[in-house]
Length: 343
Image (cartoon, rainbow, N blue to C red; front, side, top):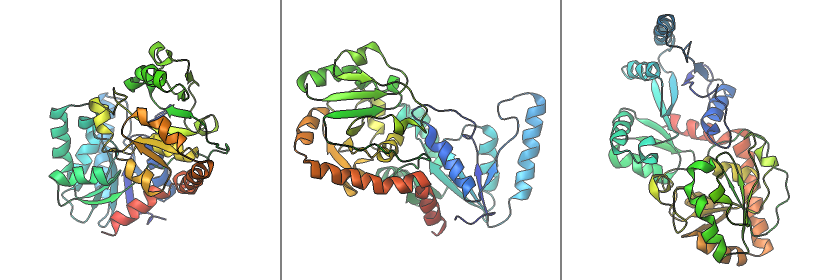
């Protein structure tokens, strides 16, 4: 248990609905509530009338009077509501209150927007304590904020049930997520034409005709995220993004080197060994726990699968099962927050 009654968190995600992505921040709020943290939820969140603005200002004053010395406020970056940023600005003046920033996304890198990235860097530099995805995000943060105190999340928690499918070694690969933003999927036919023994199952919204040019690609539909593990069929989960199949490219491909995708957690919960590019933020985690393999290009995948024995494969499956227990119980966030509070 994280110490109850002393920890608050700024709530921005609890009321959202998600399909195949975006649920990591919502689960973070649920885990904090489970552990006795107090939600800071401004009233009339989606209203902009004079009445709503006055109510939010009154709530701001109330929270400033309520939060006692020695308290902790956890917030996720990026924050969207102006009142939330104003609250943090006021709390920064109180040295007795510890502010912990969980970096969920870095929009300036993700969108390839240098001007916005400068604003994010300026915002993040005002805080001291951080929970970041992995060692590469940690190195990025310290490149402009060397005094930052960080712990690693490694992968997002995912509050669902572990899958019960028995996995066997085949050439069937899973890709789940927001398909529309993953433009490399429209080049799958080029890759699969050269590797016809492979098959890809796609899950998620945003399917296009170009993604289905190859007969070796099957669209498996859209499912609510918390039941998705029950539907996923295949032997490996692919983590890839951007525009290219030789390597992740474009702003989203570049972004992969800093983050641990939520699909990393999804695949682990599904007991699917993972395939990921060797330079991404998730690669170190995949290799450390032997839950899959890394590649330089999609064109290496077939040879790497063929080099695995069933024994090798089942060892990876078993390792994912061990990790899935912690992920589905929310232990990753609990451990990371406990560690940063001790620093």
